[in-house]
Image 1 (cartoon, rainbow over the protein chains, first blue to last red):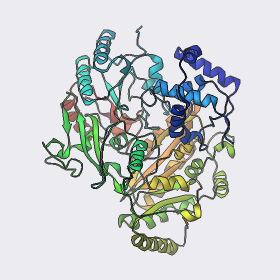
Image 2: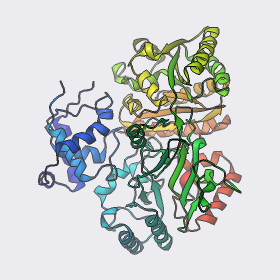
Image 3: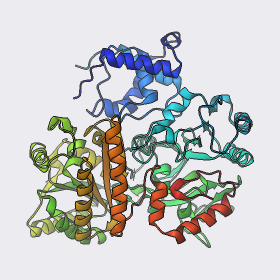
Image 4: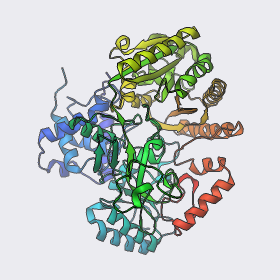
Length: 107
Length: 515
């Protein structure tokens, strides 16, 4: 299983992407928390296809902020496809991101 | 300076303003995207060209046929070029991005209704945004005795887009366009055409009889820009009582000719009914999560000695044949004996059954693809080199050993010359081979990206000199490939384009077709 270690540099890159998008972390932080089950459902149905099969990096229990996940999903990275608004709406994506940010490492 | 990120070619800002205003009136403000951050997810490509060359000026999210009819009328008024996508997951062929910079993307992903699935006639009718996963879930939830056929990005791609691009799958129904039956097309003038039996009032045979009356038109709407497909019918395979997947491993790269000669009679006679795959070592290694960096860190083509080591470590063949038998226990038993006798007589090849392979990859995902269970395991290909670069080079050939051997040797020589690897498989049609090669490169490296571009050009040029052409290509090379098929064909295509779309609003440049 591939272990993905987001470095300080990657966090900085994420911040840079946010600036490019004209977003700020506070905009997202101000949003109401979505139920975990909605986020978990989408994660299990879509994201886990790659992120729990050794193709993409592990996402569970990474202690990363929701904005990291939303940014990566919208922009893609390397071979990871970008997820458009028609693939996943903002509310669902935010729920996925919040779910992932709270998850523990799988035993 | 313009307030838009990009403008469509030859469209003024004031005309674009007016068009956007009318698009907004049709769709609503939240379904017309022009801001840079909203457009960015649509621009992600894996091709060896600059991202900017395929950037869109706007995205329209339509949900009804009537909206699309209204949109094309606006496009005609202001000469706005639109690029239609269904699920936009044509990875390595252009993803969701348009063929030319500035085109407006018409995204039909939200049109995702499964209109009907008939478990008795084994037919389906779907909208563009339906994914294979969605259809699979529907079939499972309703316990329908049906089986899907799809390409490898099955979970997130869809039947309409794949079929309109003449993609292939791995079951007996793997030649997807062959199984298509009935289309609904919005023409450039806003009229709605139903092909086959679809134009007959009160008809019920739209999804069962392909030809209708007079010229059969469906084919001309695939890989073209003559209309916007808003519904597509297709046939589904009845789920067989017995499904028996198997693999045959061959140790030497030079075995390819004998493999093809051995398989062709079995395939043509339908003893093996599905689209058999003959996959090379690196394809198999990558899809069981092997990275190049696990073995070698020096740049360039991977030496044969390393390939042999991977083959040994991962228990792979130089060629790995995947096929399956489908039917009643009696049918499968008879055909299994025929297949195993043929392999035994050849004196080469190790037959591996599902019982022997267990849950190991890549057998597991191959078995799933051959039985219509969606997965994304093949995305492991992208980790071989990393960096997100992928372009499919897919020349067609006769299903003859000599042809496949020649193509494989040519492709490997050219790829290695440019410091890239041969990562390929042959998909056996009834009498043809789709030789599918993933030109993988690190897109984060400008130098490697330039090499990949040069490599792809050389592959096209050299193969053309030997009488070969690809059946499908990414958006950066569509004009180039159109040239391979001759001027008369291009003239006919242009005449049809001018007749059906005189303003050239529908995907100008797609497959090299312009007014």
